[in-house]
Length: 200
Image (cartoon, rainbow, N blue to C red):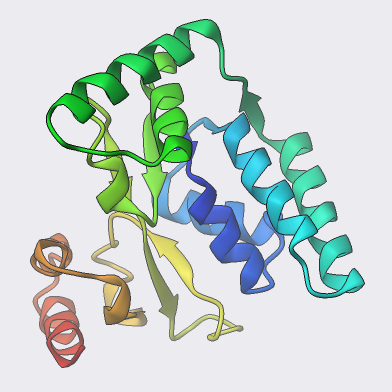
């Protein structure tokens, strides 16, 4: 099984000034060696960002980033089957009073149609899509990293590395706090993380 990467993964990395290679390295640490893919909707969202850039330099940097993304990662189109699946999900959920953002709906339907999980920093929205396997990514940074200001995506946290990571508690809400703590098997790491999360 592979993983469809949500747009938030790349938008967050690009805004922090990370290259595509750095983002993919972080994702390999988080997810292991799995096939990764995109929905063409992510290209729409990144292209939108290109034309919203406030300077020519930012626009060119974002354009280069998007070109590298299309070159290095498989991009899935919205097929008729994906469109029909998205329409069914949207209709069924709307009948229950649940509204799903159209972009998220198409990205999630793409993952469902091709049998992939979906990795995202925006868990809440994608959990509204029935049957979708969502992998929540969290932003952390390693104390041992040569560039400690550069966060890493981490899921699940590695018990061996846990003492070297600092959680950004502002990105972990509700029940996810307890879940993150449970993922750390090393007692010291679990204690350190619990203190940092509680402080947030």
